[in-house]
Length: 166
Image 1 (tube, one colour):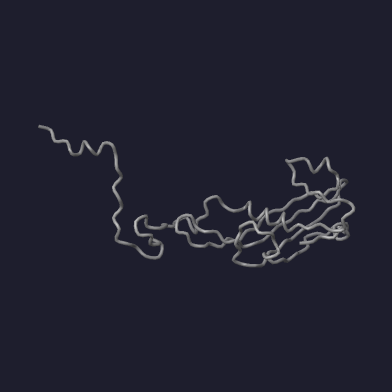
Image 2 (image 1 turned 120 degrees about the horizontal axis):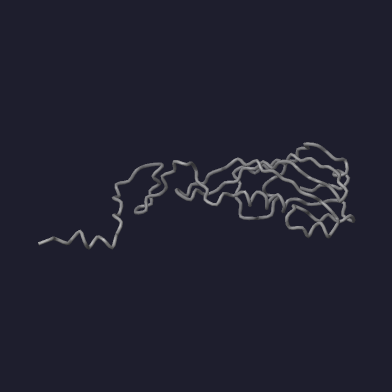
């Protein structure tokens, strides 16, 4: 998504930007819907521009229990400061993007791709009641059951079960 400096200077409010997921740099995210919507607002501040709003996307994650693909509708906040001042861009506690004054536009595709990628859950599951896969035969237990018997856990105390008192 390309934003022109003249567009930013107009200080738009809740402007809708549509883009394709194919326009984003590859971060390993798979999208079930190619459409990404961004609703953004911009304010001019003394050191540049403050950009805020929401990103709406539908990435697809593999369930860690049953391995099925699971699309998730995400609405992610975005808040960035665009500035030409080098001393501000060095602050790692802020979401600051360097936007030199000699540039007439800024490209935010990489930043949007990063925000979406960082929203990926650590252990995505398709639903909280997912039964997963059978550890013996690999059957998806959400779709059908199997006849496998679960292994009895081995314990160092199992030897005592064989002990017969005299």
